[in-house]
Length: 319
Image 1 (spheres, helix red, strand yellow):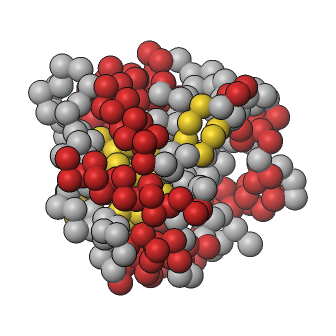
Image 2 (spheres, rainbow, N blue to C red):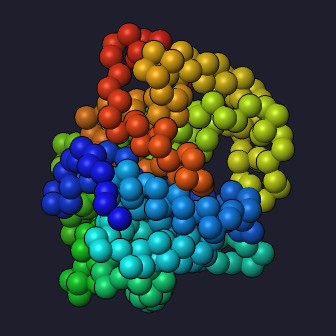
């Protein structure tokens, strides 16, 4: 398979040249667990990955916690037989608990076990970027970070980073080894990271890939009230307050403004939402969750979309 070329940028100081948009494999973990997206067809997941790679996307972000290994197995299947594989980023610290609930663990022994299990599921010799998924339990983040540093020394992972950490937590673990990357939530709806976290990352040359730039589908223009009401009960979004009133009306008004900008650029509201996050100078890339191949082309277009001042003024904010 011959890949197209997308513009790339340096991910912090890692030396990795990543496309501005990456494939997020959260939804590919399927349903049946605490943070699942409802039923997901594995064949459609594989087709979506294949299409993203055809379009030039050169990194996939997954996690052991997504479907408790299922997402990583799907990514591993997609990588089989490729002449040139994309960068593979994954995460640790979320374990399977009773009834599909998530258990957080940052002990050294647990993380070392997780890393070996992830390598086996993914079918690769080394993980390009290994990340602590959540800083929980908070007292154990130093132990967890030390375990990631150990894995890097052994060559089982090439680079190490964190997700969902705040500035105080970053400062705590930087005393062990430098933090190479950060993955926070960032979107037109979730902008808290602009105040302190993103400026801190930029000052300290920490690479940033943001997640949920389309608010888990909410900003795509494909999630009207009727569809949200019909989401399966094991889709975490059905019970999330951002998908319910009184917040829902504000967010759908924002979608209307995104649609106006999308019409000017002959693209989709979702691509505009992603491109908006990429305007922040601290952000190197955005991870976007695809569930079907048909979703890939419109969103990958965000990697090439440049919003002007008029666009930004039209979009405004969720308020």
